[in-house]
Image 1 (tube, rainbow, N blue to C red):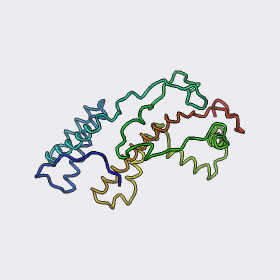
Image 2 (image 1 turned 90 degrees about the vertical axis):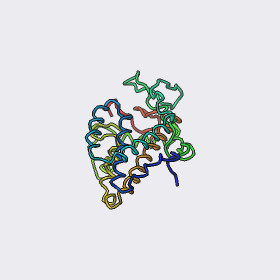
Image 3 (image 1 turned 30 degrees about the horizontal axis):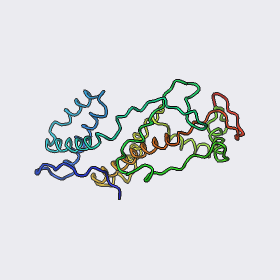
Image 4 (image 1 turned 60 degrees about the horizontal axis):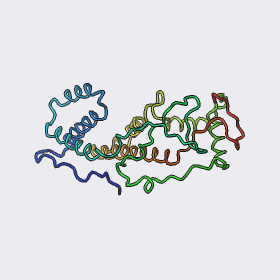
Length: 251
């Protein structure tokens, strides 16, 4: 069983209770400290909400939560997440990622995120392997290209059940930050919280489940960026020599 890599937790105060209410306070305290680090632009708002919340809460639980958060932050201090994520290291080799012709000065994003230390898995190549995309001259690539052309064209007039199923799938896996979708972690957490079975679990089990889901998403993101720039594969344009389609500029 894979477990998070933090070797040991700080010892709790001897008098700290182990009931759900105390655990909730400690968890929220840890979350607030993490939020302070993640969203410094909202530090004033977070501090205000934290001050309101701390009224009549167990100070030992608040302290312990911050100790746990501090231990994790310290443990991750050299995880390479602070490395610059923008560059212009484009390759001129065939089949490699190039700037968008409509935005030739754009930079690449996330090239170094694949080098961030994962939270649970030991190694992306070993624990999250991904085979290479099809060769540009292969029928497999041409077939995939044609499928994108059919599903993504701008003048779609036929929206049968099969098309709608694909549309729902596309929305679910929508690009992070897309208008009215939100980022995947927010969307997936909302999905999990709406599952009836979640409400039947104990509070501790709910926390374990949500933690597992979010850590899995974090490692999946690291793996995705790793493979994206490992293969550095192009984003399809409007032409493929083996395709039966010739796409217009606004397809």
